[in-house]
Amino acid sequence: MSLFKKVQNLFSSAPADPVAQADAETPHVHGPGCSHDHDHGAPKSGASAKGTPLEASAVKVTPKGSGIDQVRNIIAVGSGKGGVGKSTLTLNLALALSNQGFKVGVLDGDIYGPSQQHLTRAPRPELESDDVLNPSEYEGVKVISVAMFSGVNQAQVLRGPMATQLLRQFLTQVNWGALDYLLIDLPPGTGDIQLSLAQMVPLAGAVLVTTPQELSIIDVRKAVSMFKTMNVPMLGVVENMSYFICDGCDKKHYVFGQGGGQKLAQELGLPLLAEVPMDPRIVETSDDGKAVMVKMPSSDAAKAYTSAAKTINDSLSLMQKDSDGALGYFMLEWK
Ligand code: ADP
Image (cartoon, rainbow, N blue to C red; front, side, top):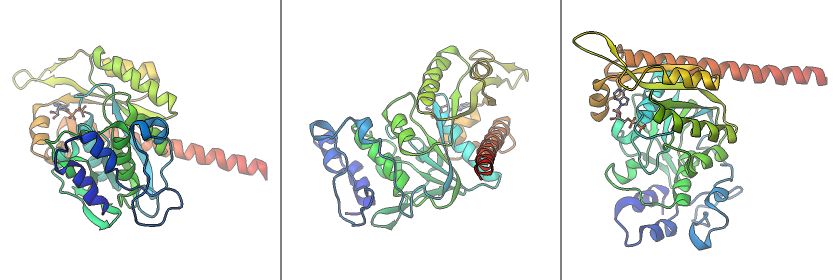
């Protein structure tokens, strides 16, 4: 059975025992050196599982002509809490990078609460071959989300290893092609998916998203500690819903307090990438499946996304130049 059918079947009917069905229907993943096209032992959860979910996912992905082998930079967009605007930011950052001439993709890593299909209304991906999917597209950005298979209203009733398995397939069996950036919209928090992802692929960096209030920042600190443990470089902090500009008085109102993002960035020694204003039109356009970068390109929010995208690209270019320089120096010395 093709990959597409399997992922689709996984969500197409409510199984009597969804967990058991998810285990039984684990889609095929080629292991290293595996060139055949039949199903075989993907890691299973439960008593028969070999090792913990974390161990099962610790295997690095092995791209075979599709997947992420031509992706230059994979960036994780993470937050401590849900509802802070992480998915909205991921999509708009991707569009901002695309506007700056880069080839970009978005992988919705929030398997249990996917948003990217709702935000883009991108159609279901086409099958390239039995084992490879072509990603969907929104405004020139390649997108994949589990909601493209299950529908936005269906709960993703999956055990951790199964969710990790899907993520792995989105990395290895989706034809991402040559991309400058693949942005991964992480689930909120510091769970199995985040850890597995950091183990599976070389992340170029992580962007942290928070709203200004301490309650959100407390949880971002936990994400920071996770990224540090996983040796993922952090590229900066985006403060979302920073302030609200009132129609009547034209004044900035700091609804959730002022300066929380800046304080966090300083504490971490990271740049504050943007302060995105709170704007009800963001909710409207997002709920209509149209991104701010497309619908309101000259808004303050779009300017903030654009400036964050520029800073991210500049820091990565610098980091990569530095590491090339270091290698060059080393080679010269060695000769
Ligand atoms: P998360 O991915 O962190 O759960 P979402 O991106 O789904 O958050 O956003 C949560 C809600 O907040 C959505 O309704 C979205 O439209 C809205 N939102 C995001 N950013 C802003 C903003 N800057 N101003 C107003 N609403 C926003």
